[in-house]
Length: 218
Picture 1 (cartoon, one colour):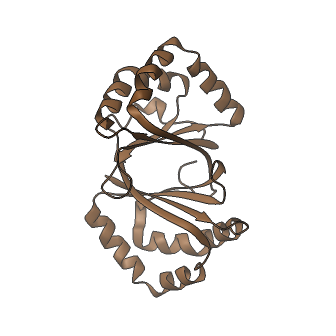
Picture 2 (cartoon, helix red, strand yellow):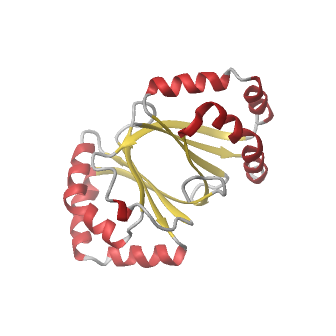
């Protein structure tokens, strides 16, 4: 399985109109051609503003290319793109794939996701495998125990930035997030894990997003 992770940043003042237009026009056209590839669509609440992040799942790059080729040849899709010309500051696309231990047990994959931590860590070159080995051995059980709702845990694919870890955690509200993360931060087992984990990383990025009404993940 591969996943397209697409991050679009719009100029200030345009995002509400863009999202409304996308739900009414863009998404139906994409579903027509991309079918069940659609996973989720999110808007940044904290972090870079005026930004949407969306995820599309495919069995292979060949399937992705075939489906997207049909879509870009559709005159209605071409017209929709023309209507959005000039709205974006930037559009970034990368492929990601499941981490070695994904999926986690079912009891940790369900729950409220009114707010989602979207975390992107970049491992130091040559240390991505070390990160996953350490996390699976010492960090995962602790984090799942405190936070519970893991929406996805991924690593870099063939397209876009490399050496990256992308993981998503769901919360019912901001107070729920604060409480769960405070409990985890105070856990001696997590503190011991963090001391071993942080030297493996080059950067850590966190944004808080919320699922839009039409997102399948919410």
